[in-house]
Structure formats: structure tokens, C-alpha cells
Length: 233
Image (cartoon, rainbow, N blue to C red):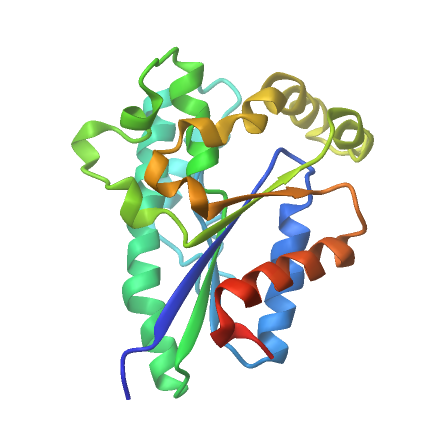
């Protein structure tokens, strides 16, 4: 048997755009089709709770997560280190862990679902006032090649600002934090694709996230099936 093919699909969008819902719906679809998959974080941080194979317990994350969660933390270098760590982990999951899972189950194809991608990565250098964003997505000493960690396809789910705000729960302890993120970073998500290298632009697909989640999911599945016929039912 040849080495299983791994297809990586990223999901992006502002807070409350529905990307988590789309990841869950597509995960359910893959389970019904008996296609191996993993859900991993592509930018920011990961829970480090060990509840699934895409979030294994790590000593590094155990030390780092309390610092990242501290609202007083203004250390952008720590967030850069965190994202660089996620990028390296993504390669391991895509090139080693997931192929092994597929091979053990005698499956020719597997899917890596990436929660946040290079589009989210543009936020930190932009907040730091960088002007050459494509060349500053990751610290230079991390030696990360963005072309090698960019998913094969990225769905950027866009919803108007008023709708995003209406989806917030005022009883959520993080209500003010989430509201601030939407108000401050909304426009950045609209044009984040401009800061991605030209050779990767055709991997980014803008999705209207204002429709019913199942309708959006059906559109996403149609696009995926057209691009990756091996994932058709």
C-alpha cells in the first residue's frame, strides 16, 4: 500500500463567524465516511487538555498556556513562539501522525482540519506595525516556510460585524474580551488574504457565513469534493 494521502483544510474567520461549527459538521461527515482525520490548531494556542489526538499534553504548553491566558500579558514574542510551535506541530501531525493512523486503518486518504491558519497569523505582525507582513509572519529564527505549512485549502468565513456582535452571549465571562476582538480586528480579517504570498492565494476561498450552518456546510463540501474527488461519498 502506498503512503496515505493527507489533505489539509483550514477554517478561518473572526470570532463567532462559525468556523468551529463548520469544523464540527465536516468532522461528522468524515466520520460517516470512515475517513481518518485530526483537528489541530494552526495559530494562536491550543487547549493542551489531551482530549483528542490533535491536542496531546505537552510540557511546553503546560508552562506556556497560563502565561498566554494572563490578561496582563502583552508579550507578543510569546505569541509568536506559540504560533511557531503550532506550525512545527502541524507538520508532524500532517506528515507523520495522521499518515500512520490512516495506514493502520488501511485507508488511502486522511484529512487534517486546521483551526486558524496563516490568515490569523497576520494579526500579530500587523499589531506590531510591521510593513513587510509576508516576510514577518513568523520569527526569522524559526525558519518556518509558510508554503509548507499552508493548508491545501482555506475557507475564510466572513460575517458582517453587526451579526457577529449579535451572536455574543452577554452572560459569557469572556463577553467583553470577545466583543473587543470583533470591534478591533474585524477589518483585519476582511483583508488578511492580501498579506499571504501570491503563490498561496488560490488556496483561499471566501465563504459567506450569514446563512444557515448546514447550508454553508453543504457549500463547503461541494467545493472540497470538486477539488479533492477522493473525498466524495
